[in-house]
Length: 466
Image (cartoon, rainbow, N blue to C red; front, side, top):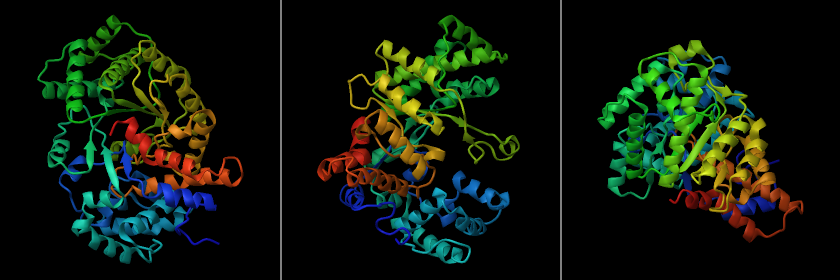
């Protein structure tokens, strides 16, 4: 029987062990999508305690605590940081078989060299030991990233963001690359006309343009797109229930925008047409700039309206949705491909029922211009665990080229999430190792090791031109 989290954790055969330890383990990390706060990197902050770096903003842990019967006061409420940590520690033993159990102990070991199993009885010791380390220079934000060999991070930023913190980091000339990503979801949210008008007012402020018509709105957003490019941006990102690809005319969109600016109610079809038009314009700009466009599809957000009104979005009330993805995604990609305006594209799905759909869809638009031009993104959000990763990689292997896969990302708000890359790499190596041992793949460790290194690091580096 193996020991928990030993050197060969998740590696079930000798070939997998060799692949991980000799090829994957020491590769740097390119984290091309996350929700880290750039100000904290720019100022190289030290967190006051373990709760602040580990529990603040982490709705994975919040959901587990709620499921364990923990009162909201100990999660997002007014209880002290230690009291919140203690409740998390008491919850951890009940997370057996949830990926949080693995992640929690990997993070304690990889960052803090803490071997304890976290529980209510070990909470005080773990909290004090880790909090003390967090006060030292080695455990600043940049120190934490350095420990995990993070070479580049791509934050998620609104078009109206000043990018002042990215600029500050760039001027320092440090080895770590910190680049923005263009996330224009609010700019197309026509299902909330009042909120969209508030957003347009902010766009007016940052561009010094008076926006009364759609052409001016596009001009203003293109100025922001250009500004992001000038500040090192190489990727865009969209968080959508599904791709919008309704037919529309320019005249229709102009009229819809006039209705938006007059705070008139839009029909459902008008909302879809407006969102469809915006997606096409963003995609064409990305193509001209040579960016990678990312589409995160399938989240059913803010299900608990009562808690949304209390805590706001992104606080742990989202789930997998069952939206129809295929036809509209095909129509959207086809429209761009037909005019040779399809940028490099990553598609992530949240519903595992769509794995084979996405794995086959990407093959329709890989045109030979670049290896892996259209990517099936890594298992995302609720799926970034062992079962989800295996299913995503198996679908991609069966219907595409896993050898051209650009691998893992954190999609996290926490600087302690980087052992997820180790988790992914171990699972990846085990998949290959099992098939070598079973005689399903040749025992060519050198070649398979190269493929493992590519998926772990080089494919993403080359794909995004970092």
